[in-house]
Length: 343
Image (tube, rainbow, N blue to C red; front, side, top):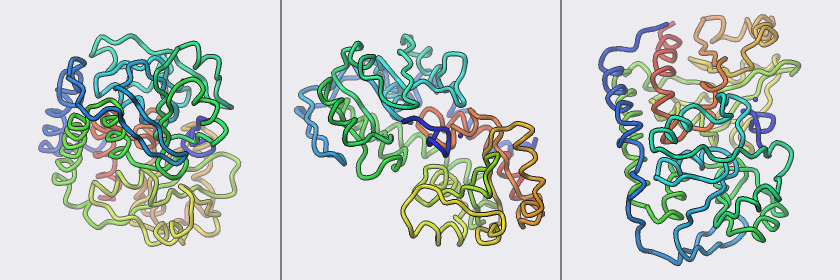
């Protein structure tokens, strides 16, 4: 159910002063006001609300207060909108000592919210644990929820699932979905606008990004090649917002369904790009992957135009971008991307 960036969908270069200053100004308000809606914000009218999703339609009589989230990103949007969830996925891959992603922990503490119960969804849904929390809504906007799981969960509480395909969607839509269900659509749009402002500021400070091609991939030990992310993947979409262009190979692969595609070492040239971005486990065995002869010949690697994300929290900030995680990510990703582009 849960995944690292692939298999389960969970596995220094100075930033120019202008970008660092703008991002820092945005981050300065992260815990107070900029990217968090006050808990006391009034829920908008519009209830009962009919929410359509891949499994049908769910009606919410009123904005829910006792929320369990499943999958990625949703919990970030809920907390940013001022609601404390009762239960969220346990984040072992990239999580902090609380088994939460660090920006979520920071946002919870900034609003004086108790840490939610962490639920392990790795193999299946622990229905009894979810039931014990007595939720009035289960939100799974970006998840791998199946029809059977959805049917069982609806016996516990109203369920809002993803729009059309498992593990597909973007942080804009997930934030808007959370805003609709919580009765705060305008606040959700405000969070999106402010987050987009931070991304736009970073892009404007790096005009050298514009039009440069990129391939975003992962490298896992024991695999006969790499996994290349598609145009539908949030990582690819976020890098595109910074001004870069997905490589021709990525565009071609994305004509077929799926959020990632396996490319053998022998066929790496098919996803050639100005810059390649990799995430991996960050250990010695992963280091050895890049010593593979075919990897060494891969044009972006041979030219040292590679950004390698070995820190798991850093990788998750790109894999599951959100209005909470993106500001956290920009301070680190943008300077490392600039270094790769300039090589």
